[in-house]
Amino acid sequence: MGRRKRKSRDEDEAIAPNPSSASFRMLGGTGTITARFMRDSGALWRDRDDAALRARLADDGYVLLRRALDPAAVRAAARCVLRALRRARPEAFARDGDASSSSSSPDDDDVLAVGARGLGLLSMPEVAQLPKVRDVLEHPSLFALADALLRPDAGAAVSAPAEAPSTVITAKYKWLRAVAGGEFTGVHVDRVFLGGGGHDALVTLWIPLGAVRRVDGPIMVARGSHRSKEFKNFRETYGRSNVGADGANSGWATDDASALPGLLRKMNGRGNGSKGGNGSYPDVDWRTADFEPGDVVALGVDACHMSASNESTAGGKGARVRLSCDTRWQPASKETDPRIRVWRRRVGEDVVDEVRDRVAR
Image (cartoon, rainbow, N blue to C red; front, side):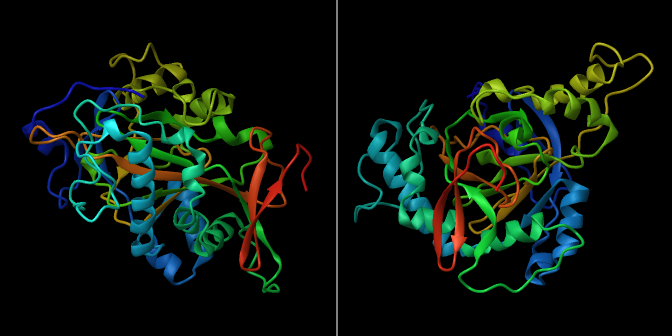
């Protein structure tokens, strides 16, 4: 993961200003950028206006849904993840003991030891299969949301027998992340990790496990990057490549969000990426939010995004660990990327494994 030298408390406050601000500064990896708040599409989902929700995703490249999941269930899942992480990496936390102990304080369970890095949650897939965690990450409402987002615009929801298999599938592997202080995920699109099925009908549902404030390193999305002309060459070159393990540094376009305008300028044949000449940097409309338990962000496969640097360290303590999960979804009728063999499908009240080969089912 990328790292950045710790900043002072004053600099932290400059990065996370009053929520009433129209725009604010964020550490986008190793560089500082200006961002704005995401718009909330939760009302569209509550009203089950699926066509409007798909139109919003097509326009922005993302949709933010506040309280799409039960906040209490999400908090319970987060506690399970923290307990598992503490058992695996006790030295990484500021306070000894199990997060489930009676002496545990909920205010510091997620505080890391100073300098803790590389917590390795991505390499512990068994944590995502813990019942309370799996119940959140494969909740019926997420199957319904993925179906609503992936159904063709002309299609309408069709009543089916309760035991009928779901129309969407989700990857069994969950990209469960524990982000330490100074860490982040670089600029990328999900197609480079998941595009082997040869279609666009893919969405990522990003789920914050607990409150994730701007200073904690939340997801940031470049609004409209999936369709704008400024990103066209970016999508057709980097965006069509196949890279390393999902989420790995080898798949990042850059670790510095502030360098993205120059990279786009260079890709578009307008110089070497420096300001000046006949054109200026293209604008990148970065969007993020202060997230609460229960919130979900849906991303299109070509939406350029990253996570900000976790700059939550304050008062001489270690950073708060930022917990989140990426879940991948696509129509069951479509071919799957051969890099992901085992998927999950809802059948009645159960969610069952479905092994996929290269051939579409």
